[in-house]
Length: 83
Length: 141
Image (cartoon, rainbow over all chains, first blue to last red; front, top):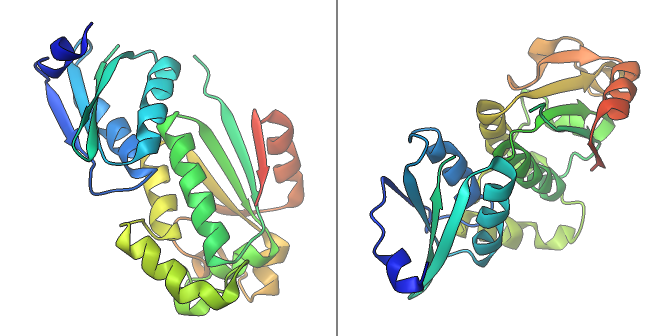
């Protein structure tokens, strides 16, 4: 999927974790994933560089599909699909 | 799928290392790990009801002269206290906190009720060794 497509994905849930440092965004993602259905798409907003690495790895381990990361001004939007 | 297990021998009673332990617990919680924490000598003091995350009563393991800056920086970054990290991990995954009976006594704690309410039981060292033998990840902090 190209960046432009990812940017325009419609998400079921958006988790704004920009106010927290590691491990905040990962835990916010973990808590939020329990509130959506399999196949739903979630984005995590984070200003923490580590989240860019953590969330894709976490998706691999948990079986969720990591879709991609979009860099915005001062933060990242990390997209994933729940297994 | 069977959960991976983390066994943590928590020796430290210092605020900086307890915070590090809290961050690691968060990672374990995000991964749905099952966690056993054995609260050993110095750590049992921090688990006393009258201490917990009262940072005035906790020392730093390293850079003791920079405690104020360290705590202020954590606050600015909205980082949770060590007790908050432990509580949150317990809410998310299976975390059991065992106070070493000897360690408790060293600091005047005989009963579970003498410790903050995230502790699950008081145990002997045999329980720790058994858990460590079964764990996928072993840490000593």
